[in-house]
Picture 1 (tube, rainbow, N blue to C red):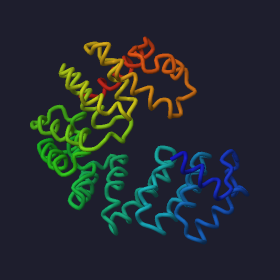
Picture 2: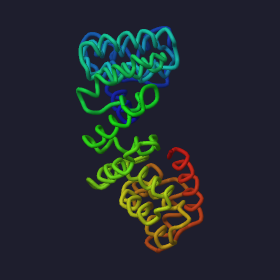
Picture 3: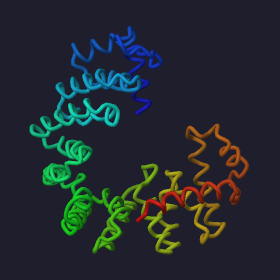
Length: 304
């Protein structure tokens, strides 16, 4: 997202340090032209980002609404910079999302989120269900779990999980009482191993590995986490934090960790100095152990 905004700011000559909010800054006049006259949704997005950062939520909403008018799929962007900052704008966003949802079911998931923010839980469940019926995915199982009938939520979660493995990790993490949790685990692992690891952060493999740690299946945990560690430094760090793994296993993860840290924004971080010392030696620095304990503790606190 940051890279995207930098590219667009260069394209439109936007200086994101200008703090004026009462008038249109000179450096955004071209973006205004592209958004409001040439109907360029990306220019509208830049305006929304800029004014949201400056606290001018009326202009943010205006730009986001224009993008929504141009392309209804961009209505999903309406709450990116505004929610939680201005109650009157939130009300306008909810109304705008309702209108868009009535035209295009693809927006109903976002509308359901807006209704949840207003504590209209029954309506939120209803519109989330509308989205689920069309796409076989979305927030419905979770909303039903929180605000509706858990039996229905469990059924919907499993059905959604079977149709799209990439949503299973969420249910593994947050639905500990699911009667078919073994099936949730199975589909989470299918997603984890379906392709070469490409995600970062709380991936299916990272969540599944944490679940296995909680269950004390440490070899299974290492297996899925190491698979993900090839690309995802978070999974490497979780390995570092598992006291029941061998130093050899942790050193193997440290080698993978250092390989992609070298090509990341962390290359100038003190952690890279540690990596450069270990190189291909099978060593496991204390600094990695400390980082791993914090990461594992954080993930375990989220695992229900």
